[in-house]
Image 1 (cartoon, rainbow, N blue to C red):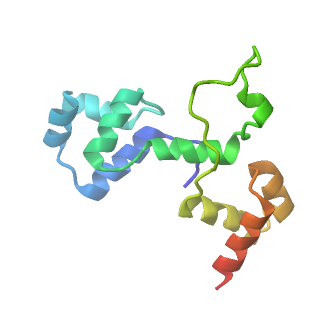
Image 2: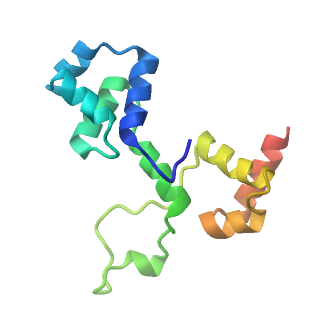
Image 3: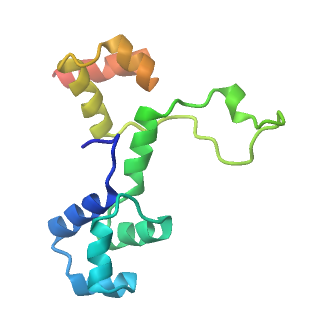
Length: 142
């Protein structure tokens, strides 16, 4: 899975095919035509309300794909950055820990094993704590 370039329409189409979801059910659930549903498969991105409906219908968290992208490709905010421009803290929720899924761990370890990246490069680029990375390596060597 390429978390860098997400084509959400293709991901939805794949899930529909895996589940053999009937097009009539899709159209009824999304209140759309068959043509509209097929057009969504071609879309690189969709509005969040439509994506939420697809997630419910197909029982798959499509938003997690974007969360994984953020974990891998966006720097985590330091405490100084959490504060707004006026120096006050934001009222938005702050997430203290990244959630590393099996796919993320496999992706990182594959990059190390294939020698695309060194351990230090992974730590620096993806901001994964050194102890966490070494625990993954030990656990997955078994």
